[in-house]
Image (cartoon, rainbow, N blue to C red):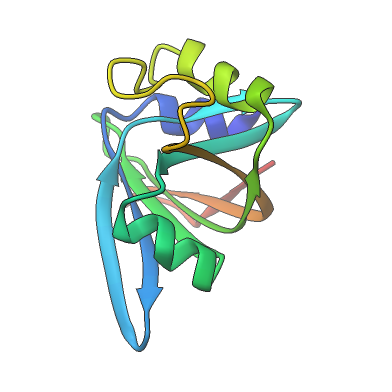
Amino acid sequence: MNKVVEELKNMDVFFIGTVEGDQPRVRPFSSITEFEGAPYICCGNYKEVYKQMMANPKIEICGMTKNGNWIRVEAVVERDERIEAQKAMLEDPTGPSQLYTAGDGRFEVFKLTNVKALRYNFYSAPEEIK
């Protein structure tokens, strides 16, 4: 499994930061899956986060595990319009299958590209997640 996906699945909630004009925006997410070896996130195309990612595809993700480790992920999102990618997200236990169906015209998935991920704790230097 992709190491970034594995790390984020160890968190009940992680937070995604986007930019709206000159204002940062952060919100909780819980859906993450691996599709074709890459991490994928999702949202509805009627949400502000969707508009923000379409205007500026650079995002950051941050989350903390119960044992006190946290990760920070820099990435660029790339919209994937394929039904197969949507189905993979909805079939994942973290996917929002109660909210969307593949091809419903509202559900969007994004591949994370240019990923740089670091794991942190209070006792040692950051460790790159590859």
